[in-house]
Length: 341
Length: 119
Image (cartoon, rainbow over all chains, first blue to last red):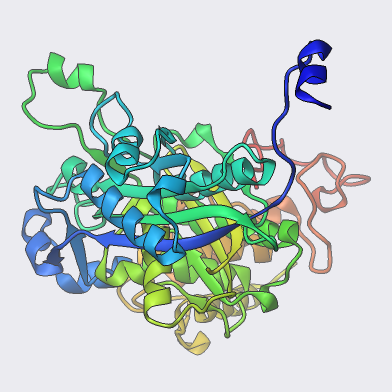
């Protein structure tokens, strides 16, 4: 209907028409401080051998003081925009997935949108722990498909070293810092498949910040509250329940495991990655992301960091089908298949 | 009713699939951690596979009591005798009246667990 007819109808206008969405570019910023196992073992009375066997981590990346959540987000985003051949002025949405932006408000996404030079893009943070990037990707895909947005940056970023207790045996050797970004825009062919996502709030305490900020202040602590995690139940949930989600995602996308080129799970732990692949009976030809070995677990940043690295190394080629599956505190999870840009 | 050796053999296959350890090494007297070098994460995988294979439940707080292969076999045998799993019976959701819980004859099935079967 015409604009006049629309106004006279009294109905709410509905913009856009359905179209396909795709990841148009990828970027990353690895925190620059390389921290080998030898540096963390003292405080937790452990060994390089034990850490490698337990998690597959050889070294992890921690941020320098200059590498703030905002700085790493902007850096990863710039590389993604460059990769996509898109100018920041075309971006009309910025979604940042993080749990380590340590201000309740404002969202770091608005600062990122401003620093990148977008034209007042929509911008907000989402908090879905290690599952955040895939949640963000699903949101961005739908926004673009329906026509609400033209070009959305999805950024997963963490400075988990700020909220990790170096003496906590369950987490001190695991968590790390970094950022990864994807540009999502319209496409002639479907480039982002349907999401399978959900939560299990009964397991709310399995991975969490130990204390509420108010408890910390009331106790007169001068320490930050820290992350805590129950390793074995998390391993079980991730390796088996999430393997079923992965299979469901393939089914919902209408592809078989044989069609997959890449398996990019959240880099929680190499043992989880291997157990998931076994549980899914992943075919031999599917290349598996193992970025955690030299990065550690960077939560919301882990999937875009891993995927971008696979592209840089030539392990992932343009047009490849990649299954992304993210899972973490909440418990929360989200998974989708994408075509590599 | 599965024999001790049948259970041991099936469990040994599972341990082999998860860890690569030779099934013949998985004997009743062997300790998982000390003799077979199976750590707690591998035990989780073994336990989950065993639960599926034998259609029994092995709660997390029981797992730490399963120090040897013999402990695990005994636990599975006991769990099998209370669930009255029969080889060839297709396990379904745990409902009273389901054929695998002895609906339709014999003593009543044990009470259903409180735990909801999640995905």
